[in-house]
Length: 398
Ligand code: ARG
Image (cartoon, rainbow, N blue to C red; front, side):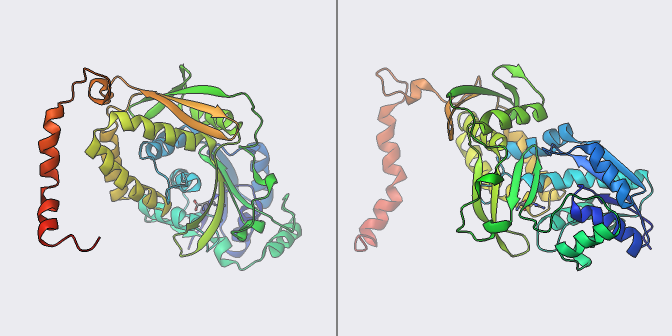
C-alpha cells in the first residue's frame, strides 16, 4: 500500500486536483514538487501556496535551470537532436530531469511512490514512467489524471467544491509546456492541421526588433560558452538567445508529428534559442569534423532524437550514443556568426583553430595545392565498376 507520494506539480488545474484526489481517494500523503526548468511565467510562491491549499503535506520547489541546461539541453545540442528533423525535444528533455528530482525527493522524504499529471494520450506519461523505472524500479508510479475519468468541467467543479484555488476557465483552449529549450502549444483550433495557428499563441517569438544585427556564438568542445565574446553559463546563454533571436520573430515550428502512442498530432513550437544553437553548432561541425565522422554522426543523430522523444533518456543505447557524441566533439571549438533580421536567422560565417577547411586545397585561384594530375586516375577507378556493368548489362534502361 502506497502511503506517501511525490507529485510532479505544475500549479495547473489537473495537478492541483490530483493533490486532493489522491489524498481523499487513495488515502496517501502528497508532497508537491515543482521543478523550475525555466518556465516563463511561474511565480513559485503562488504555486507552493496553491499546492498547500489543495492539501499537500509539503510543497517544494527546486531550481534546476542550470542543471537542465548543462546536463540535458547541452548533450542534446551536441547531438543536434531534432525529432523528425524539426522539433528540438523541449518537453522530452525536461521529463528526465523532473524525474531525477522526484526520485531524489521520494528518497529524502521516505515516499514509496511518485506521481504525474499526464493523460493517457501523450508522450509525457511514457517519459515519466520509463525514466522512473530506470532510476528507481522499486517506486510505484501513480497517474491519477489517466485513471480518474473526470472531464475538464468535472475537474473545475471538483476544485470548486474542495476549495482548491485555480485560475482555469471552462474552455481550456491550449495545452502549453515550456522551459529554457522552448515552448510547446497544442490543442484548440490547431487540432485541425489545416488551421492557421492563431496569432495570440506566440510568446517568445513576437517580432519586435527591426534592425538587422550580427551575433557571434562561441563553442568549446561542442558547448556554447559565449555570446559576442561575453562568457555565460549554458542556462544564461540559452535565455539570452531566446530573447535576442525571438525578437526577430524567428524560431517557430508548425508540424504534425508521430507520438510514441501511435497518434499523429499537430504541434506548434517556438524555440528561437535552441534552434539557433543547433543550426550554429551543426555549422561549426561542418568545418571541424572529418567527413566520415560527420556523416556517421548525422545518421546517429536521428536515432538519438528518437530515443529522447520516446522516453529512453536513461537507457544504455542513449548512454553509448552520448559517449560517441562526446568523442566527436573534441575539436568542435570555434565561432559561428548569426545574422538576424526580421523573420530570419542565418549563419554567415564560421571559424575554428581546428578547422579542416583548407584554403590551399579548396581555392580555384592559381597556385592551389590540390594535385590535379591525381584526379584523372582516381575518377577512372571510382567509376570502373560502372563502366564494366554498362558494357555488359546496362545501357538499355535509359
Ligand atoms: N509533442 C511534444 C512532445 O511530445 C510536446 C508535449 C507537450 N506536453 C504537454 N504536456 N503539453 O514532446
